[in-house]
Length: 230
Ligand code: SF4
Image (cartoon, rainbow, N blue to C red; front, side, top):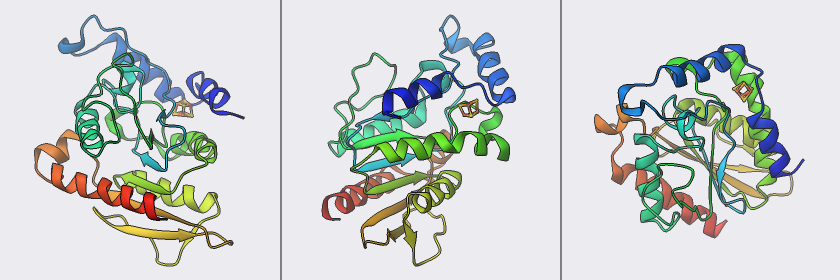
């Protein structure tokens, strides 16, 4: 299965009844600021450079972010925080991510999530996670240049550990989530990939100062360094 076939399967998926209901329900009752917008209301494929060395793994699309705009990390405050950081490091051609036709192009970075539909309260159930995880694995197998995974938040981190294991890579140390943590994974042939942890750039984290721009930049600087030297 190539990228286009995989994406076609993702966007037509309706395996999780609760999420199918929710992704459509939020479109019918948008907040005032998005009144009149036509929501995507379908699952989201990954977005970015298919030759990327850096894979960014979040949790799931936001109800009025990706679920509205139809693109991963697009149209909400997390998207702005991420896009401006990537732009600062030369990994994006512009500092904003607002809509599918905004001209944003990512270099060396691919954005994805283990759950492709917006979940209520940003909390997918265990079954929903399990239903969706195979898409992440299939997607990562297409990224032949992948060197570094940047996991945003504890759930994205757990999914990333599982992903690296499923790709045949193991870490000597037991990976434990924290902001700025770094783990090296190796396969049987001694090839290495790296996992970095970061707090998620949710409004809750960025507005409270739990995650500052400097903290986020430093994770991506390190990702770039590891991608270039591994
Ligand atoms: S969360 Fe994933 S598995 Fe569930 S309906 Fe959406 S795309 Fe399908």
